[in-house]
Image 1 (cartoon, rainbow, N blue to C red):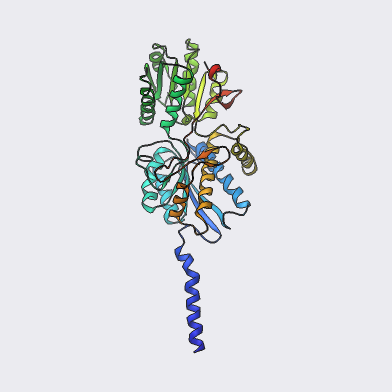
Image 2 (image 1 turned 45 degrees about the vertical axis):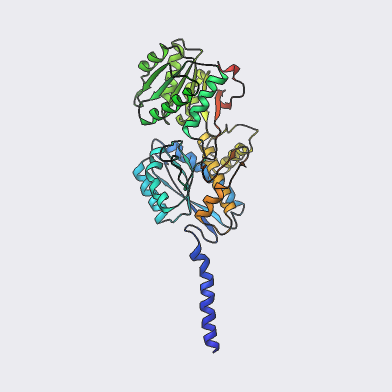
Length: 393
């Protein structure tokens, strides 16, 4: 009889002990939470992916050193996709099926994110934060497992137009854009923003990413005598846009204000402009990392120096850092019994959540954490948020 009781007790105990393991979502153990990322760590977009990764991982490392979350440390599994959509698909499949990560974070690029989205959407694996502001497919319609942190491209276009019309009192705005689907989409965003004020662009100019020749586009725009030019290009086009600004000023457009969204790579753009940075405005989706009044900026710079001493602070890295803060806050709020659905619910419950001077708000019908766009100018080679517009024109 005692032997029967012993066997029953052993079986019962075994079942009880294994229930939490059976109930746990993939990527979660008693000691660890696995987070996956696919991003460009080499190739033309290598800077974007590397800095996003370093910003994200710097925060994860600090969380781990402080004891983790509910006794669990974060394990980051990151793969290089070279900004190649097919490689991103392979990486995402591996992260979900082989590495069985709990969640994804900080994917980089519209084409890579767009092509890999069906994988995590169908597997119901949350992706928290991505380096793209594209809206069709990725944001509209809303997907429960896409949790954006940055503002969309349309918000950047609106902020630029609002500043040109309201702050600078301009009515004559031209658009100089990259001649492809990306440039066309941001052009339409700018046109929509102008239409709110009953305005249409006074001129258009286009450029090819493969050449620095901006003469045709500049001639078309200069003929309309615009007060402002909205310039649109992807990362890596900063030499072209800087060339446009320099040649425009040489041609007499010294009072024109040149606006650019964050997509170009702000630090490289500032270096390329050099002494011609006057009257140049760049929209950003995170605040300047040199702002002494923002604790998140100081925290990012301190941790970047600690874990990646060879890196210089930058907007891309700060965005990855903020992505990580949103994910960690969501995991904390989801509680010790961690599930993917619980993580999504927890993030959707974040309202006016202060991450150190940056506020994010989510909801069941709102998966865009940050709505604010920061308009910056270049002073002494550094970006500062524009508070007074009187010195811009």
